[in-house]
Image (cartoon, rainbow, N blue to C red; front, top):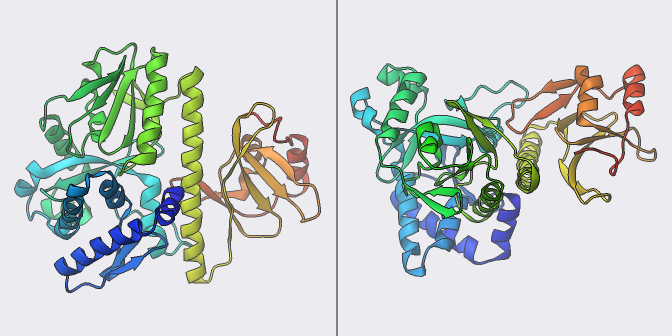
Length: 408
């Protein structure tokens, strides 16, 4: 995502021009609000610390025909302005409830600037875990917007999240007939055109109805795409990963690079063997690095504002010389308060002059778990309580590795 934002400003004046057009329309529709454009994060800050992210509208604007670009901005603005419309009672809300998938690392970026990072995070949004990267939530659908249901809504309607979720899934089941196109032998792509394609992974019967080779496999690279193929079809699996990569990099409303396999009535994260597995692993490594880069930038800005002195370690990719494989590493310096990301290798730096000790993440956790306190982020990060010493450090040195010997 950071690379996308950088590309925006390499293509000036287009990105700034789109932001200006959106800001002007919003100011016309919301005359009582203070709206400020933040070019560094490519968003608009509004009264009450709310934010309006512009990445999606920019991509939609660029992909639309020139004659329809004004319509895209008008549609986006209507969605922002109408997002506060909430039904007063359950009967009014019931037919409008639908499930949505949320990318959890993206949700972190919403709360990091506005909460005390020294305290455990209590989510204000309500969602149920679907996978390590995704959560499922309930939304109120309207003509121009999709607004997530919150605790005040459920309390007003007198129902639980589980009850609202059951209503939403049933509504989605009856919303439209199955709409899948075979885009290559054995690979099917949804084309509902209603922004709920990805959420239809919750309707497992859709996958079982397709003529797939083996158990169903799914990817949801963005909100408007559900890809399905069979676990026993290597060519379709490889094509699925390639198409998911293209959608994640080029289209709006990105979700996850996770791949799922359906066994019975439950989807679970899965990775195939061979070409598809290698391509999927590389895609996921790139996405994890981007998530950590965004997380690091948000944390550093929040720490600076709060006057907190913490080293937020980077998650960096490097290519191994022996076989060209990519692996990640993070540096843990001695004597520095550190928030450490998960990585293939942890580089223990005792001094600027000395040779660092590199250990795999598995070995680091095995011998130094007592020094780690998990923080409340979707992209896993730990508060390091102290640098390894004594017997712990001795054991880590015994299992030390280097770039070429590290197993990915």
